[in-house]
Image 1 (cartoon, one colour):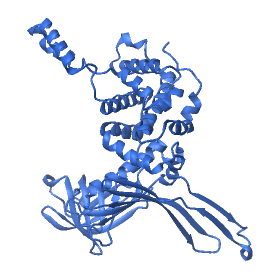
Image 2 (image 1 turned 135 degrees about the vertical axis):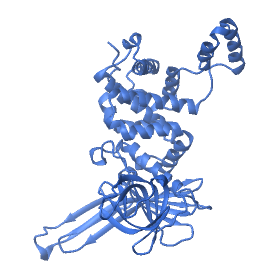
Image 3 (image 1 turned 90 degrees about the vertical axis):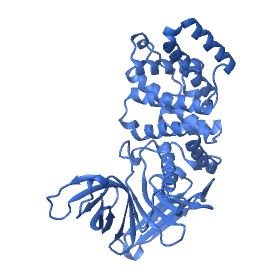
Image 4 (image 1 turned 45 degrees about the vertical axis):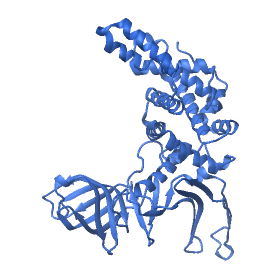
Length: 449
């Protein structure tokens, strides 16, 4: 939740220069713009809309689209949905390289970083003459993560307010600060940097996470801009309902692990997208859809990391020639369809290779050998994808499928922990914190009935 706000200004829409408008931010972070003069429908949606706030400061709105059109209204006749509002910055376009620094507050980041400590001792506040408060604070060391284009630093930020002898506020957050090195970067790139950090926090919590606040500074200096971003995930459990299973302070090289997650985003873009979708929507998915998401992740992750084919090219070429010659012209199209994927490693082979390699930290929780686990995962995926009657007897259902999903998720986590550079013994200790491991440890894998 955030504080609701209203900001007045003028906006230079196509054919509507200087239109008066009211920018509104509701408690859920949704941003809308109400205009007195309508933007022609043919001009919508707008990628960029420039304007000036009431104090004369520049402002830029990104991704503006019509939400409500009411020409009969006395005052505001058109309402628009806004994805991002940059207050204090005239941004030519989202990709323009004009930014040098950014600072963000991300919900839950302080728990994932870990390593800090706070103790508070107070007297009986009803006895004013003897009232006291003692605060002890252990500050964690700033975490610096190097990247090809700049440096990300996570630092403790403590705020203390005292407005009377019996009332004070102490707030601890971790700020994420990014500084571009060399050339300036665009807003899209700056937003991506903090999006990936949000995804890491979400991965550690398995909960919805968003940016609470973002401030960017242009390469030419100045006060910078406050960024209002309507991209907070509205699905999945909130942070208060879960505990982080992964904390950076529990790792031997936390900076390398976080840098590794950025590499995972760059080297495995498709697998990263599948993971992000799963983290956002998992709470709304049933056991079948969870299995399909997780199985898809494992297949895409392995294929991207190891794109090799089963046999050498010359063997496959000879095989194709023999099959096409035997089929004849009338079955050529059908034969080409079969041959297209004939030299790929099977899904079950991919899973076995992952379990014997990158996902080795999850082997103790499988409840079966890697081969039997991979076979069951493949059979379940095949049935719940095609619903073929002959595959039904090999698949899991209901509670057994839900339990199986827990084990597959731990395999996915093990793959990612390996990718970001966490040693296998350390990765296994991280996985053991999760309630799924504690519930399934020592229990055999349930087989189809």
